Length: 210
Image (cartoon, rainbow, N blue to C red; front, side, top):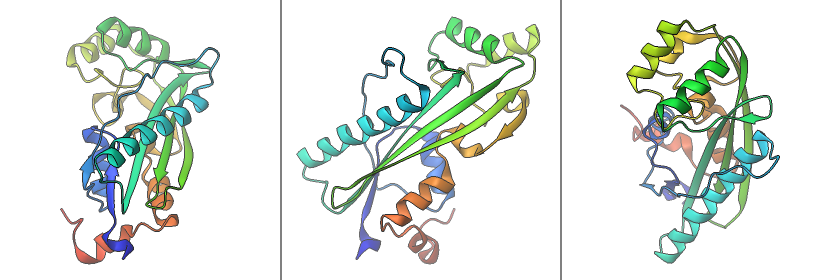
């Protein structure tokens, strides 16, 4: 029965796990896939998000096959890219990176793209791309310095996490909020359901209840 199919998430992101749990889905396994995320020359942010999500899915799927665990599994991968125009912002690891990102985003509208990729138990590959637009207020020196001191920016695309303190910077958001967090729930659930994963079985059984 498809209700017994497992779901493997090709990510170690706690926020993606939490978002899936919000939708009543408990991943059976986390299989983070580390790949080179360097953008190609002149690569559009949309293309980067799709390419990286596919690359993560394929790498995780290969590992599952090698371990003999791919049979009967749905594999879900995602990658989120923040961009101002065609300029792709990094996943900030150093305070200078985060500062540069926030100064660029201050008082401007930027776009957040998440590429989704699902590999089904039969080996079919299905992809989606989700886009949201976010406008930040003009950040004061105090706001910028205080946010950098908080450390919430570390490892986050664009140097901020909307579900934290940076939520106070958002003047306007057009599109999916969960996309900006890192996993657009509407599109993720629809993609899984369309490919036969019994998302709502968990709702009926109470397996996803918290």
